[in-house]
Length: 200
Figure 1 (cartoon, rainbow, N blue to C red):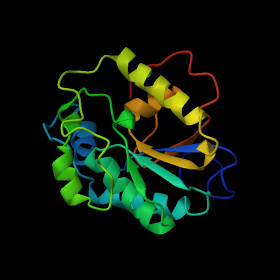
Figure 2: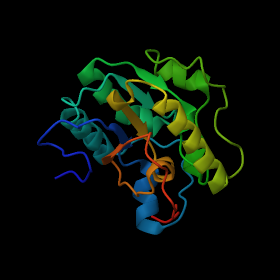
Figure 3: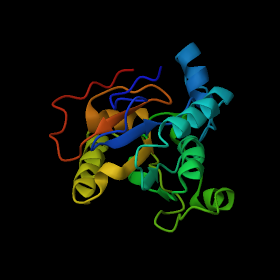
Figure 4: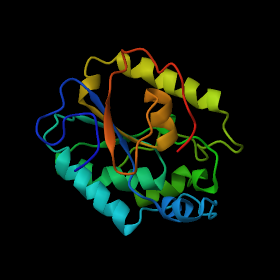
């Protein structure tokens, strides 16, 4: 059974935004086995990652989601795709929910490349090179998460939002480590975590 804090699958989520970590990527597969950066830029999902995305689409189909926000990394877009299809909800691509830039996998694909691969998405709000060029300090990621928290809390329908993001960004928002393909509920009006431990 899926590990999450939203009461899946017995009942709909009650008043919580959903934070979904992307499915297993090619980077995750190799890094988990070796603990070494395999040097894969903007990795795609593995077959297991695609299965996790399809499972999420099925499990989240009755949660009242009307907005999907996704990171521009390919692994997040591939995870969001079956959910968007199942719900008939468009994907808004937003680099604020991207992963912390720390490994080769965090080198993204240019907006022009992404727009050609995903013509149904709106990439007009991001630069062609939208990821950092140097390692992102932890405090910057936490600051980015704080900005996102404030932006979402100002929306009257934040509880109907699904965010397809990454381990580091979800950790910065919640203080919790989430596995590939798993999700948790999030209340942007609640206090931020008192401590962030950057360890898988």
